[in-house]
Length: 261
Image 1 (cartoon, helix red, strand yellow):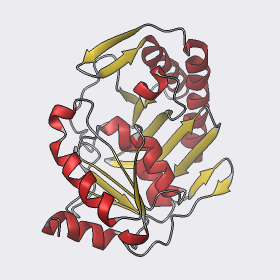
Image 2 (cartoon, rainbow, N blue to C red):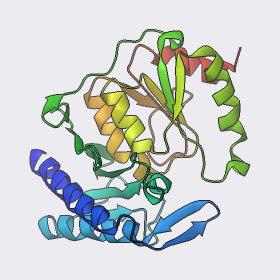
Image 3 (cartoon, one colour):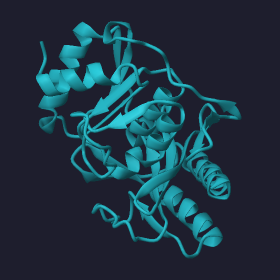
């Protein structure tokens, strides 16, 4: 397991070098309305794929760019690396320093390794099942916030806000009921920050598997919980997710299930 983790960290560092090379020099095009993709995304993914394929030629690879499939992986699939080469592309495009490389490994239907690397602060969040979650060598623990009125929450919005009415409704609710609320533009970093105790919880309704695969392992290994927003079993291929420090989880699940009040 630690061999897998070390390889993921090395791959993330190689991708970060690519992003630094391309920063402020790339061309931008749209892969969908308001959804930017850059030459840097593709180059970063190729750097990760090339390194991991060299170390583990028998493993499969699922990346956001270059037409990655979105279907749920069968439990008998080979070990599969799930990669977002830039989570927070719009931030990267605008040179706003809140983006990362996210790498997860799924084995026999379970996520077992997660790495989220934020290059502007050189923060390497890493976790392997049964080995804890770490930030640059320091052990991570989720927070102890017991209620939403004492919680700093994070959320994500879809790229096209024409489909974001639900996110806006919950934004309003938690703006009035939580201590505070953040929209950062990077799902993977939101999850890493829950693991680090910087955020007390994160929810969103428009995730992709490459957004969450690395962060799910981080939250779990730091002592937190990850499910769907209704409290059902976590499914990284589902669009919705709820990650918390643990104590907040029943309260937030109850709010999402019973409606705003």
